[in-house]
Amino acid sequence: MTARILDGNALSARLRESLRQRAAELSARGCKPGLAVILVGEDPASQVYVRNKIKACEAVGLHSEKYAFPADVPPSEVLARIAALNADPAIHGILVQLPLPPQFDESAVLAAVAAEKDVDGFHAENVGLLVQGRPRFVSCTPLGVMKMLESEGVELAGREAVVVGRSNIVGKPMALLLVGASATVTVCHSRTRGLAAHVRRADILVAAVGRPRMISGDMVKPGAVVIDVGINRLREGPDAGKLCGDVDFASVKEVASLITPVPGGVGPMTITMLLANTIDGAARAAAHATH
Image (cartoon, rainbow, N blue to C red; front, side, top):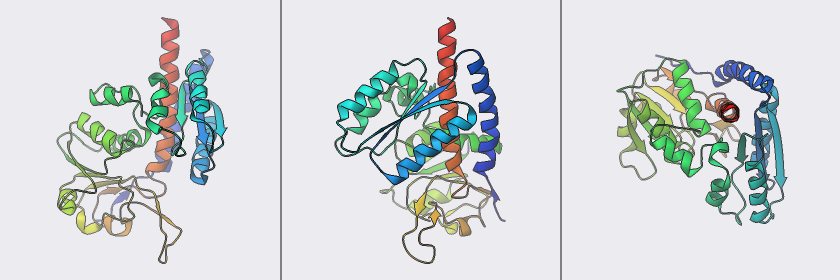
C-alpha cells in the first residue's frame, strides 16, 4: 500500500476561493474583515510568517495592518497598541506573532487581546469555550487539520486517534477537537512510556512534537491516516538545510492510507484558517451591529 497524499496547497486554494466570496459579501455590507498583526523584533522566521499572512489577507480581500516594534520595545507600548486595536471597529482579528523577546510575559500579552478578536484562539476564554464544546475561535493549525480530515471524509467517531505533542498551540486543542468529533483520543509527549505501542494503535495519527522524522513506518498501523504538523530544518547529513516533518515520510507513506507532506501539507491550511477566523469575527461583528 502506498498512501494518498493529502495536498494542503490544493485544499487551501479551494477554501480561499470561498473565503474571498464571504469577504466580498461582508465588504458590500460595510464590514470589510480586518486583521492586525503585531511583530516584535527581527526574528527572520517570524518576518517571513508575517509577510505571508499579510499577502494572504490581500489575496482574499481582507484589510490588514502590520505593527512592527524593535526587540527592545517596552511591553507597555505593545500593550497600548493592543488596547487601541481592541477598540478599533475596523479590526476583527489581532495576531501577536510569537515568540516575543524575553522582557515580555507572553501569557499577559495574549490575555490582553480581546477574546472576540483573538483569531489565534490562544485567549483563556476561547480555550475554555473549546473545552466546553462550543468554540468561538480555535487555534489555526488544529482547525486546519480538522478541515483536511473533513475534506477527505475521514470518519472520526469511535476511531482511535493519537496526538503526539501537548503544546497549547497544537497538541491540546487538537485533542479537544478530536474528542468533540467523538474519537477516542490518546495524547503522547516527551515523558510517555512505550510511545511506539501507543502510536501503533492509531487509526488517525497527528504528529506535532517538533522532532525530525521521529515517527517511522514500523510505528504506524497499516491503513492509518497520518497528519504531520512538524516543520523542522535538518542540520546535518545529506539533507542538511531541507525541511522535514515529525514523520519519516518515505517509510510511513508505504504503510499509511493517507498522509500529509512537509512542506505543502498542514502549513498552508494554518494561514487559511487564520483568514477564516478573521472573516468569522467580522461576520459576528456585522450581526451584532444589526441587532
